[in-house]
Image (cartoon, rainbow, N blue to C red; front, side, top):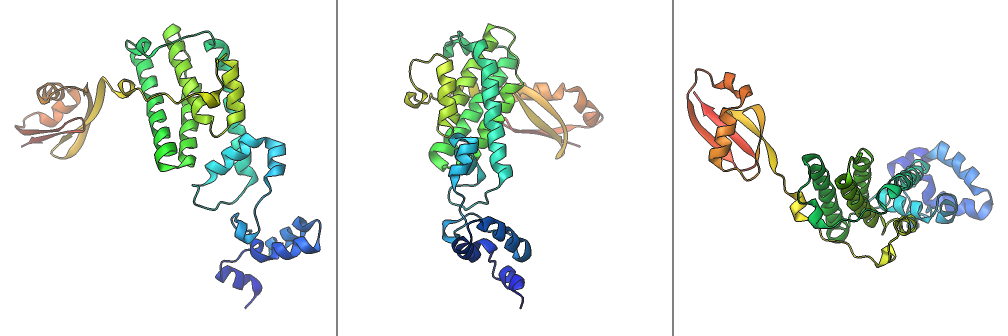
Length: 289
């Protein structure tokens, strides 16, 4: 059996044992390791037991400690090994740069804006929807960080939140208040992962305390509530439409809205409604014959 075939069968990579030998023989061992890997197989996932861990000093010097920390936490759940790649750490670096550039755009707009939660009780539908999504992200983040310890999915949530806020253009004072609350929440969420950049951003907001001294606010449960919800409507078990109803509507109100829906009329014409089944907030099924 050839060495390459043996290594593939036993799931051994060049990094498992060859690295020990090459480090002892050559100062420029990486050049020889590349040749070995090209002929025998790819390197293993990073693991201390296999002596193929990456020295973070070089990456820290090039990209900064925040980038390295973000990449390590995002690459895989904490209980798993992962393969260190240049593409991965460059992606983490691009994200932090995107966050930084966004902060420099937002801070001049919101720096002098103040808000209280009472200010958010009478928002327009657009702002209420945005704030609901922000607090939904925040709630998921807290679950991942504090209860599930899934740092990679927590970071993914922050990335989704940044995408959301980058697409938002405030039109008035209320919009600026919603943006400032959301931006501050996002900065707090990112701070345990990238403390250096977040501390700098926090100071630019003229905060009295360091971000490391700040406590995380409670999720605004009122913000998570929806005035209107969309529910699917089936006719004899087949999806025929989706209608919007008040979230607190009773069955009588839902029945009235559903039966007045134009898109459903052709499915009901000439037929008798035998039963209306309503699963609150989730589904309406019309049984006709």
